[in-house]
Image 1 (spheres, rainbow, N blue to C red):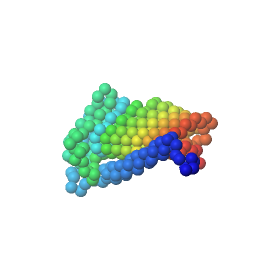
Image 2 (cartoon, rainbow, N blue to C red):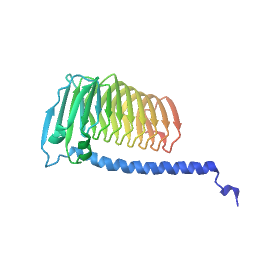
Image 3 (cartoon, rainbow, N blue to C red):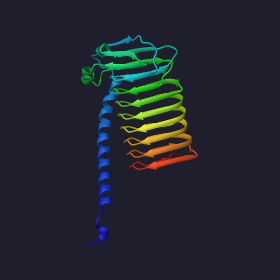
Image 4 (cartoon, helix red, strand yellow):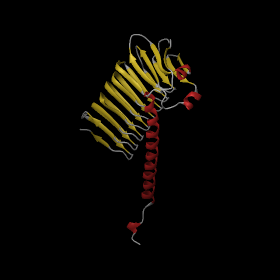
Length: 262
């Protein structure tokens, strides 16, 4: 037998690793599209539901933690306000409170499990400042208008998309471990992206001076940096950087590609 036809143990190991990653990728993609189809229906009101609204009196806060079902609309304003609109039964089950400077949005677990995909619930939040958003629930998050803060951390462990009109900050940290896309616009001095979830992180329209990207997930990552990019790609998704930065530090160990955008 020709020795060149015999696969070395290392070659076999690499093939198994590659195949396992491809299987994981296909499984996560199926979960992503299945769950996202349900999340999109949050914006459609159920004809049989009784639609109402309720204001929740809360004191000032600097962080938001959501563990409920519903879409969040976050805007920056001089006052602190929280208002919910949607299905009357769901609003009755909402538990909204401030704990140690964090606005906590909870809902009874039985309601979350029985949630119908055509049931509407939107929560409108106004705050003078914000340092952290932690989305562990089900629903989309939208930053409306201009949000200008020194530092902002966005953590996504739930199901749903996160988007913004214009974020302005010195330091922006994005942790994507959930199911859904993150698409942000604006500008920052330092951008840090940690992508381990299912879904894309697109900050092409968010201009950063320096960007650090650690991609170990399934989705693609896009960023814009004018001075420096530091990219570590160990996942399935691709990483594309824009802005033609002078300094580039790139390490690649996964299936995905790392490339400069047009």
